[in-house]
Length: 245
Ligand code: PGA
Image (cartoon, rainbow, N blue to C red; front, side, top):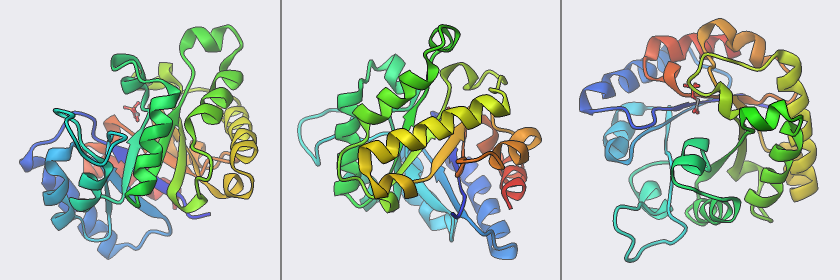
């Protein structure tokens, strides 16, 4: 399976930062990578980023379930596609927590992404309390069962396993914990989608950096990475991409 290395800029990025996208694009022209590269940006930057991105794919970070209407401040999946995005993150834990998004809404957003022809990167992950209680695998399997729409195809669906306690904290699970979670997620995906569930990539996310990427990307059922902080600078992101090669 081709690895997918995706960046998530979160609420960061002004026009001047498009230089990082241009640098990634220049690198990708010089050193072809046997995988897929994606940067998920604030909606304000999408169309300008697409112009600078070359073969780097550009994605959004959230979408509304509806294609249009009276939803002030929201962005439809069709709008992301129209701006040149080919993917969108849904159900990131920062949205699950800060915007009280539940699995039903996330499934509706993933369906919207599919309707618009986008890859839906559906995030799941346990809290520290859930991990300490021994519930991590059950929690993420239940999130997959409830937030991955039935009928999703492998080509348009990726899961990102992001333990909430590992995001932006510098903490990462052990290699054994990552493997155990990814194997459980694969089972849950196959249960939800049948054959399509065997083909959809499962990315790991949470404090991925140049120093730990090679080790994490070798783990069974890890099909790539979703990278937050270390995706903001082309140099760091490229060091992670090289580790995947
Ligand atoms: P991080 O974020 O790499 O900064 O931990 C990952 C994410 O939130 O997707």
